[in-house]
Each structure stands twice: as C-alpha cells, then as structure tokens.
Image (tube, rainbow, N blue to C red):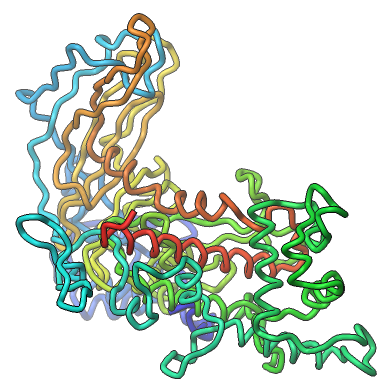
Length: 611
C-alpha cells in the first residue's frame, strides 16, 4: 500500500544481447538436440530463435532455455506459416504461435439506418447514405463475472423501503453489488450516520487526533502540529532564537485553522491569502470579519510562521536518498491518503486509469514539462478512480517496483500493475486511453492475480495493433464519406493464457483503434441524443448507432476526469505560486481527501434514500 519499498537495482541482473545485424536463418528447419544446443554460441542460438519468431534478447542461458521450451512446445517455423498469419503475429509477450485473425462480419445482420440522424462526429451536410454499411458480429466472448458482496440497507421486498429494527436503526445485510459503495463497517467505526455533518466525514478521512485503535500509518492533524513545532525548534525559532522571536507553539486547532483558510480561499479566491485576515471595512473585496475575529490581530504574523515551519513529515528523521524516496516530505501523508481511501469504500466493477497533474512553479529535478494541459508544468501520478473517487495513486517520479521491471514490464505498466495489485477483488473492468493501452497491457492485466479486463483506445504504431485491421487515411471529402463507419475486427488466437483479446478499427474522421478484453460481443448499439429542431423550436430525440466497445469506453473512461473536475471546482491553491514542491503535493493530496470524503458522504446518503 502507498509508496512501495524500493529494491536495490543491480546492473548485472538484466542483460540485453540485441543482435548487431539480422541473424541468418538456419539452413534447414530442424530441431537441434540438447547436446547441439549446449555447444552453440549466442550467435548460433539467435537464428534458431528468429526462425521461430522468438525474441533474441537476453543472456545465453536465457536464450538456451527459450529455445528448449520452443522445441518442447513444438513452436512452428516461420517459413511454415502462410503470409497472412506471418504478417499478423502477436510478437513478444505472447505465445510464439499467437497471431491476429481477421473476423468477417455477419452479412445477414445488417443495421438499418433509415430515419436516423447523423452521429455526433459526422459534419453537417455529409451524405449519411454514402457511409459504409454497418454489420454486427456473431462471435461471443465469455467474460468472468465480477463478484463482490457488501453490507447494504435491507429493503422490504414489496415496498422497497429500508427496514429498521425496534430501536429505529437501519438493518444491514450482505448483498451483491457492482457499484462503488461506502464501507458500512468503516462508517460505523468512525461513528458516521445519516445525521453526520459533512465535516465529520472529512474528519474521518483526515482526523484531528489519533484514536487508540487506529493504525500507525494513519496521519492526523495532531501529527502535523507536533512536526511543525519540532521544525520550528530545530530552526531556532522563538524567544532567544535567530528568527521569529515571538513564535509560540501551535495547537492542533490552530494548525487546522491555518489550513482551513486555504479552503476558504477556494470558495472566495483572493490575490493573497493574507487579505482574508482583514476586516471587511478595511478590505471590501477580500476582508472577512468572521476570519478576523477567529485569528485575532496577530493573524498575518502567525500565518507567516505557519508557512515557514509547517511540516507533514517528521523533521527529526534523516533525509533518505532522493532516488529511493523522491517525495519523502509527503510520503507519510500519501500512505495515509491511500490507506484511508481504500478502507472507506468498496470500489465498483468499472474503473478507469489515467494521470492526474499537480502544477508546481518551483524548481525540482523531477518536475515534468507539461504544455498540453492547463495545469502547466509540475508532477504527475497514475491513478485508479471510480465515479470520481481516487482509490489509489502512484507518482511517476517514484521508482517503479523493481521486481516488475525485472519481469519485463515498462515503468508505466509496472506502476499500473502495482495499482491493480491493490484492488481487493478480481475481474474488474478498467478503461485506459492511448497513453497506456497496448496488447501487452491487455495480456499482463488479465494474466495477473486480479484478472483485470481492460478496454480503450490505442495508437497504431508500437502498441500491437495487427496489420489486418489497419486502415489508410483519406483526404478527399467524397472518400471520407464512403470510408466513414468502416469497421474491422480481429481476434488473438494461439495463446492459451490470453483468450478473447479483440482489436478493432473504426473509421470516423480518421481511423480509431481500440482493444478490449471486457466486451462480450461486437455489435452496434442504438443511442439517442437531443437536437434542436428549428421548425418545431424545441429539442427532439435524434437516434444514431455507435459500436458497443466505444460506448462502454465513453461510460467508463471519465472516472479520473470527474475526480479532476470535482477537485478543481473549489481548489484552494488556484492563485498560489507553489514555489515549494512539496506544498503542491500536500495541497493536491489534501484536496483528494476532501473530494473522496464528499463522494463517500454522497453515496452513503444515496443508499439510505436521503436527498
């Protein structure tokens, strides 16, 4: 959980012996004996591997074992395969015999589009009748069911109303659910009910004081207070010190008030947070009598001291090497956020993975150049979200788990796999965009312990898209009208561990490529949206068809975007420069906890029929 332990990396653990030139195929397609293999050099082993479409990367011992396994499994020679199979071989990461097979559509199951409106991506004026015909596919794929039982309010089978006991307490029972719902046991342990104030929900995520039964990894505001006062002492602040001679130790409530002033700044942004401490009569636009009366006349000085000494890690602990813990100043807070976010809910079947961006204007060697997002330069982390709830995250400047890197994962997929390992159940459906999606990710996700089924858009090059579904770009308008709607579907065959991997290409304004291990079939589904009719002067239903894989992707993929939207609605660091790198991470994580507590509170009220 949280920031994983970083293992020591040894350069001699991974040996890459890529050939300098293309190996020459063996003179005859025959299987060498074990004695012959034992006498072979690396240069002799590689032609035999290439002849079987196997990787030539690795030390000699790896190549020997790979060749022996291929002979034992009767892996066919490339020359014995026809051209169609040879051009669509799955490649590294899959079984040597795996290849993509083009699936023909069911020509008897054509979609009738009479009376339909143009789709959302079809420009006005284009002839809809000129588009390619739409066919369904008869292939059906068995997907493992998602099984999760949670505590939910018991309902009367006739009236569907929530049942209560003699003391007017809600009766709970174990029920199957594919939705993201709050953990009732966790809610009870934190004394949360339908009468609890939203602050009580946030206090469960970010406690003020530690309770006896709480684990050591739970961080409280009292810990922030202790560490802040320790840091001030170590920096020689206070009476007789070298800075802030009037400094006095903070209380837990005072630390929380100084954090809360930033929350207030999210509701009513001011150019400077210090303007909030003025009376309304002194600053009509930003002043607040309420805040002035709480903080008193020394508010500005105390807040300067807060910004100088605030700490969310123990200042007495030695600073670890940056390569091992680059985010050491907030790593304890990150572990707390992940722990409490996972304990508070049962995450539903449909999840999505994407990055979240944390802007930072300071100087740090790990800051990324981000010119494609409004947030700007800063840090990024890979997240797993559901309905806007950030379940877990993994910062990209952290080293990926070394055991997964040694197993052949890329750093990106190693982080994703680490997030998958934190899920409590099996057979989730996770959507990814084209940054993550590839044929290799589909296989590694489904063959891991959690058996994750994934779907999403992918890029044409370097992601395992088979040649049999590739479509050429067209530039002329008349050709585009004819190509629009062209669908090609292929299925991976020949890999016993990876069944049901489907790749599709759909020509819209350009070719769009998708992969899925979650869809049970490939069919067109009828959708409907509202369009304004100039003659009737009102919104009218406009039906159109969309392929089911894209429809599923559209409904699942937005979970991380919802989390960004909710967190950004009243973000309290909107005008902050955030020169300190760890301040930007702290504020981001604090707002993640606020967003998660809101979603848990909202879902708790929904399952109890409370508006």
